[in-house]
Length: 506
Image 1: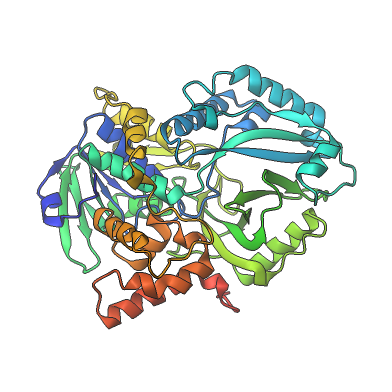
Image 2: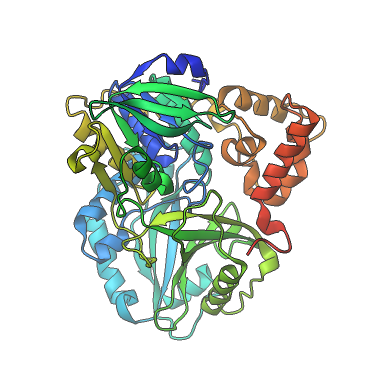
């Protein structure tokens, strides 16, 4: 099912709900609404999944941290949703082994982690139900210090007591999974429009009747519905103030970033590394496509920007602290390929402690218009569950009528679902027309409006920044652009990879 972009036709329809924001939470709302037989419209001001969703660590967590804190409610939510992703997207979601070296202090003692892993095995024993054999997750275990050194040769050996190994899941090509979710929603009747910015709501007698939105040419459109869900991620608070009133607790922003280095991965396992200094941060080293992806850095930010980035000083401090955590690593600024950065919600102003759960606001309960809802989520893992809960609240008579596993398993049996995924070192061959046909099909069927849509969010080409810029001129010829537009699109892509420049903005 292609994603159709017919603006006049879209404006002529009457929708059960309009969703503002096309990240993973907005996409899941459109998908879950469509499963319930509801007619949904998804509006995204830029490209689908182009902000926080694109910049995540691409992991699906099982909630082990919540189990350590004895928050069983959150723990079971994460386990259930991880199983859903593994069941529903066997072609995109893969097991990810994780190793945490243990040094005998605090909550990272072998005895504490052994208990947590035993509880995990006891409480989540059915987590592999329905999961294909290749995607089943083994149970975690405590391993010896010698085994830790074998898995992670660069581990700090001083005081090492052993290690905890557990299994989560990862989505190496998250951008493709998100587009599959949008395509799935459209196959069930939804309409999805990127580069369509909602600028206000329509209302009558203090009840929502729709939204006004503008495209990139500043042409205005009205879309009609009695329900509007503001799922704008970092822009949710701004949208709430624009549509009705400001709710400071909806999204208190903090900048977070993950860094891709031009280094081979240190292990086939994801690694949780921490220096032994008091209060030191835990770093997550993801062996993403054979390269070293490290997160997560945090910094206070009050203003939500379109393209947020850490300063050069913040990045330098991040690298310095990471080098202290792993003796002999000696990473340098010049090895930075890309910085994936975006805003995440925090518990309170002037803090980098992340929120633990979603925020949902029914504006009518605060003297606002009836039919307007705002939502702010935290984790990729629970996006579908949050969508399900909100839709049950708004549309209690509409239960899910279609199997997501059946829908996406059928989609992934089609070779087209895997198009756009290339090896990290892939380069187009001069006499091979297959890649060109694949790109043209993506452009036609997945509302590609800009070159960076194609490179970053419809294919895996953007995973390798150096390769992306090398073949960008060739990819630009796939579009029917004049010389001026062609140059603008190349420049726009180069700006995305600003950390490849010697002196990125401070």
